[in-house]
Length: 354
Image (cartoon, rainbow, N blue to C red; front, side, top):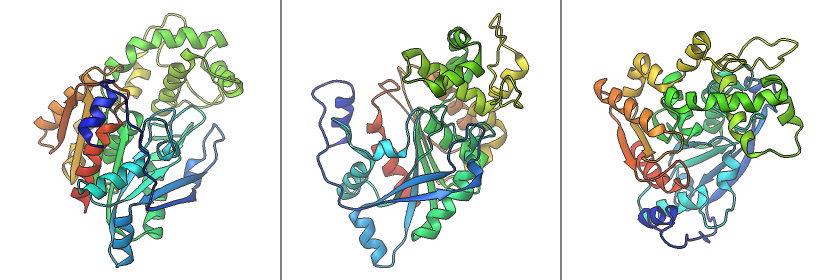
């Protein structure tokens, strides 16, 4: 199935095709346990890791060769396991890896799909006492574990979509010694455009439960989640990532929205903490880390529901002005149904890292 066909399928131009191909390469499950993931939520520190190597990659390693590593960072409400699992009218990451290698578009890699889910519904892959030290974990726990288990060529890339794309881009700046290439698909950029219009709606929803602390407690005990819960929980997870507060008896997790809970007026000091984690802010001081990458791939749909295309255009302008080599593509699409874009990043990064 070509990328063009997958593009058509993603936008409803014909019946989507299901990938029936069996996975013929090496697919392994193993665990990494690290105290770096201790968090206030009480989430487990032992995390399952899925790795896939195509038949061509297995043969190369059996003959004494080495392979680069691509680590896939999942979007919010997902994890590496989900991307490796069966889904109707779709293609798993191992199937995609094998198809691209077999066609010659992609060089074989060690494809790593970690479980990075948290009790707040997802991960931004930064360090937080609420969610865990995920940025350090990627560089100092997961990466060494992969190196000790497999014959790598020493080159590691991060690939992700949405929150995962944000995590890939941010960690290239937060941990520049660890990563050699990055692909950011529709990653969070431009916080003012993304988040400010949604805060009042989130506040209204969480106040039904007495505020953020009561809302999170409700979520942790709920039998199921309502439609508004998913967005409200995501905003709470963002607050936990970007502006974690000291725990109190009334608010044991230390999650606080960056606005007055009575008037919904933005609180400047709190919002500045969020903005420090906007890639648009961080690139100004950390652009030299991005200049050293073997590849920086960024894309976004022109009709993204979270308006990420506007922040993406802005950061691409800054990358150009700061002389950071990059690949930028804006495509006709939304935030959803864009896995076909992985054909491009997998091919680009694998070839640049081989």
